[in-house]
Amino acid sequence: MPVHKAVITAAVGLHARPAAVFVRAVMETGLPVTISKRGTEAVDARSLLQVMAADFEQGCEVELGISDNALAGAAALQAAEETLRGLAALIASQDAAAKAPVQAS
Image (tube, rainbow, N blue to C red; front, side, top):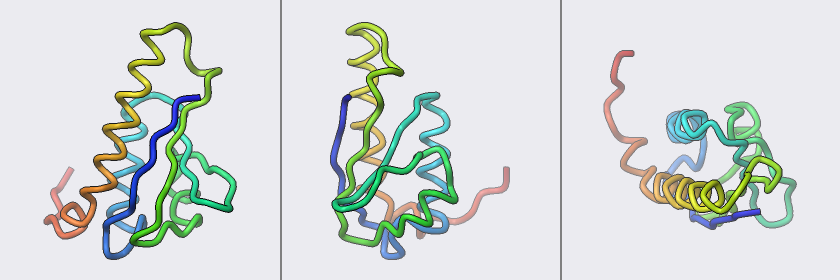
């Protein structure tokens, strides 16, 4: 299972807008990404409710993962690793996203 670690930087943690931005990005990947912190079970990163309920606070290290069952072949594994790096970078930049103005859809 490919995994990648990141540190939550948003002042509010992975709640409210930072959580919504993160979950939207995960949904766009089309992959079953999970997120966890030390001592807790992984939750489905595609679920805003699960992500917010897991209480990922500012400064906590999280682990992002994708089950091997969702991947077929070396190219898929490499794409999954790139996806996790991108999501980790998003988490690390969430403090700016939390302060960004809301855009109408």
